[in-house]
Length: 52
Image 1: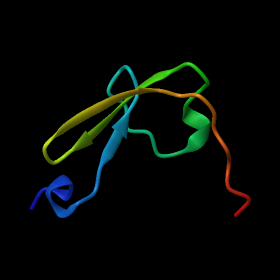
Image 2 (image 1 turned 30 degrees about the horizontal axis):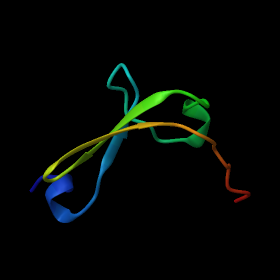
Image 3 (image 1 turned 135 degrees about the horizontal axis):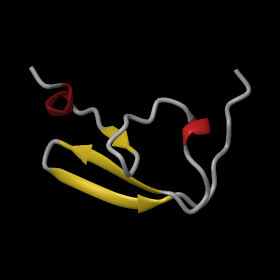
Image 4 (image 1 turned 120 degrees about the vertical axis):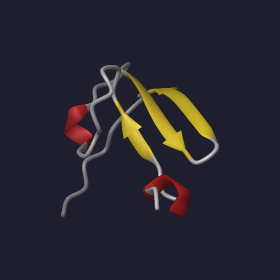
């Protein structure tokens, strides 16, 4: 079963590379979030790194 059909989403950069870390994106960068029923295209306004 596809992970997206289970309710998860996948976010990629302009080149289609999977984003796994907040450090992979910069302010102003365009990203794509893929969901089960379509996609959301966004522009990064800000990032906040977790202190874990």
